[in-house]
Length: 61
Image (cartoon, rainbow, N blue to C red; front, side, top):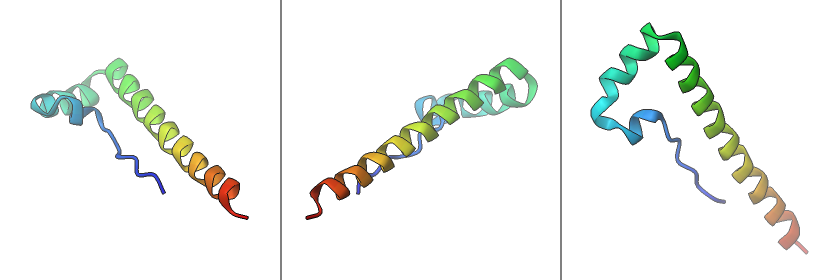
């Protein structure tokens, strides 16, 4: 099984964690971008899960 780490925006910019939180609550456009970023991360995790399932099926006699 492949491991995929969740990757919130604050992981990329730990020094800006407070600013990220403030903008998420005060700026609708920024909050929308964060939501989209997180959705893409979920899709990435799902892709890895599917790949693992494919591999298991392909390698099981």
